[in-house]
Amino acid sequence: MAAQNGADWWRQATVYQIYPRSFADANGDGLGDLPGIASRVDYLARLGVDAVWLSPFYPSALADGGYDVDDYRNVDPRLGTLDDFDAMIGALHAAGIKLIVDIVPNHSSNRHEWFQAALAAPKGSPERDRYVFRDGLGENGELSPAPDWVSAFGGPAWTAVGDGQWYLHLFAPEQPDFNWRNEEVREDFLKTLRFWSDRGVDGFRVDVAHALAKDLPADLPSQAQLDAIDKATGTHPLWDRDEVHEIYTGWRAVFDEYDPPRIAVAEAWVNPPWRRARYASAAGLGQAFNFDLLEADFDAGAFKGIITENLEQAAASGSSTTWVFSNHDVVRHATRYGLPPNGDQPRKYNRAWLLSRGTEPELDTARGLRRARAATLLMLALPGSAYLYQGEELGLGEVATIPDGARQDPTFVRSPGVDVGRDGCRVPIPWTVEGPSFGFGSGPAHLPQPDWFGKVSVEAEDGDAGSTLSLYRAALGLRRELQADETLAWVPSRDDVLHVRRANGWEAVANFGTAPVALPEGEVLLASGPLGEGELPGETTVWLKQA
Ligand code: GLC
Image (cartoon, rainbow, N blue to C red; front, side, top):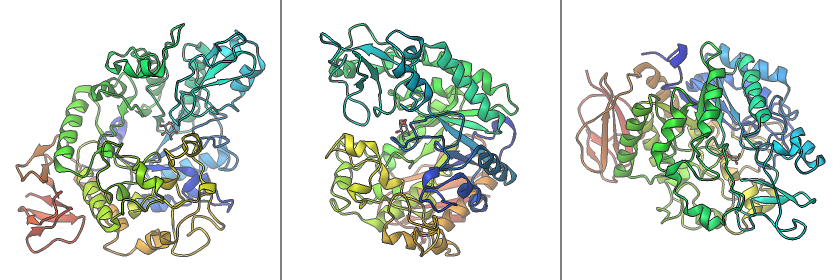
């Protein structure tokens, strides 16, 4: 089965996430840009990806890395122009690569013309109704309407505007939440979906898809009361409310105006996991991220449970599942897997290690990479879409040594001493062994790169048969050739080994243990590390083909 075309192209696609400000800088200003991406299309084609997901490239003051959008239907002038966008998408399409763009509907930036209009307009005005404003408490509204609500980046979730009113921001104060009960807000996003779809965009990644619908009671609950509400009921005032799906029904109608229909994938951190199904349904966005592998330890039992559950869920929703190990919000998986299990802290952040600036606990870099390669090779053999994050194909690790003064992520300043933030996975990609920013641009990069980046650059890995880049290229090429229907069978194996088989006899055997195991029968297609004589070493995955 070759790469899918037609309406179902996304079901088992390999999607490569580009964080545009850190991918390639064509004009040497230190910030990656759209011409930079266009100049690397050959690289993407050679890598073998089916689609690119582009994180926000819209005008933005970068209060949250571009997830604070000033204007949804334009390009940040530092990243290029709409013409550059057209040239980039033209080059991608000519290479057979689709384009998914990020859309950020929960909040705009505080510089968006609507928020500026809301600030200039009085209480109760139509301008304020597009956002979530509330009167403050106290005689003159000088107290927050919900003083202890904490935003996702730390710090208060409500900010005063000076006339007794306050606005809600679930994220940074520069990211005021939209009021999705407002008809103009709804209409404007449909316009945005059509704007990019008309320009040839193939789909959308929907940021914080589970937060749009809100229902705030007159008396706001405390944070503790909010936290105690059972999210499974779909009635939480802020998150994952059932009526959010009405919005996506409207979006689906727009997607279906196009041929092939535009696709969407929801970023919805919902719990319990079965609540993802409605986001993923064909009447809704069509697909939803499952972040379960990204939150799991390198453990055969954990992986098996996650794979089984997600394939069942996908089958129930009619969608295909998604697999993700890394993205622009989490510690890179080559690093996570080189650190000891994280206790009850979230796996994706490795807080203690980041706070120690990468010194404690000690990182086993070789082990992290070995496991990351093994985990990825298993994932790439599973049914569903694989979402890769720029740089993981080089085996890049997290950069923990960014000086405090160079950090950009708002979590760093908003949660002092608790979260270092996400800059460590957003350091610009090394393309060459040498150079002021290792080939990223002609000058220094907007986030400093460590010395070791040259060794993991594209130039260093290109042509090295043992490199992670060579492994990804080989795996993606074979994945395209071998792709089979969306079923999976488990071949009985030891507890620390996972052995899966696709309908056409394509198998992956992953040894999560440290001791070698006997290599099962079959033609060896590819391995994540060197194989022993008749043996599959520890922390290694092999692809086999049965006749
Ligand atoms: C999503 C994005 C993240 C951003 C947040 C607020 O979780 O992935 O980067 O900070 O939404 O927009």
